Length: 327
Ligand code: UDP
Image 1: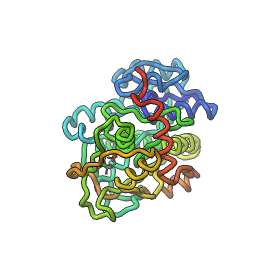
Image 2 (image 1 turned 90 degrees about the horizontal axis):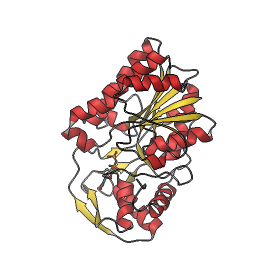
Image 3 (image 1 turned 30 degrees about the vertical axis):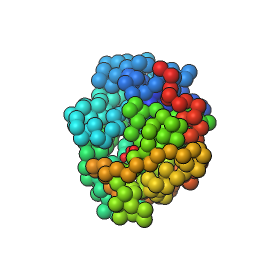
Image 4 (image 1 turned 180 degrees about the horizontal axis):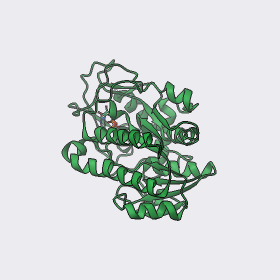
């Protein structure tokens, strides 16, 4: 299939682009390089463009005779979304609306959409299933949920078949450890701890040590980017038979912040300074996925079920790219 990968120069999008090509599909990357890296796209077809430009989107879908779209292009910083909500509704919601309009014009009816565990807000119970109430507590999660709702209504017109994949904590380096995580500024735990281990940061801060968890720090469900991308390929296939798919993507196993730090210490063999800091606003104590729906409906089986090999892949990439991608 010819697949337009919006945000294909970003962390997950670039991994997806590589996996699509390897699986015999033809990816076309569409990215404005505001957050992504040209070097991560490699030899895939690349269109430099912005999702604000509905005309360019339509032209691209027509020019390359695109069969399906995967949409990764979004802003993801929760703190920034709280400070500047309107930017998030514009980038995440309005641009997704433009994409749907262009798809409708071009008669492209298949979409796989990157959503997030942030649509659940503070869960009442864990692990979280897709039937849990959605109640985002920040503009980032709400902008993603708004897109989910728009997709549902567009699907009901018969013009769209879609898969919503709600990611838990994506991490690791994929495509044979060739494509890693390089956000600027970095805010994600695993790359931050690795940067401290590499001596690129003075310390690692633990945001909150007084949570009601066994070691007092937050627990998250870390899922390798290769496993995430495999679920997208399966979802693309499943859309041939089903018009609407909504699945969580996580391992179901939680690791605390302290466990992540210990794992990086063990994998890297380095020591570094750890500082206990106050809680970060809006962090639920525990977020783990019930991903049984993805297992049954998509026949998805994550290969990285332990944290150590996930961290090893990230460590390998960061050791080779201490300054991230070359610009
Ligand atoms: N975290 C931390 N120190 C940091 C960055 C993150 O203690 O410098 C914690 C954060 O509070 C959360 C977990 O690590 O409990 C994962 O955070 P991340 O930002 O990687 O992903 P999120 O769960 O927010 O999507």
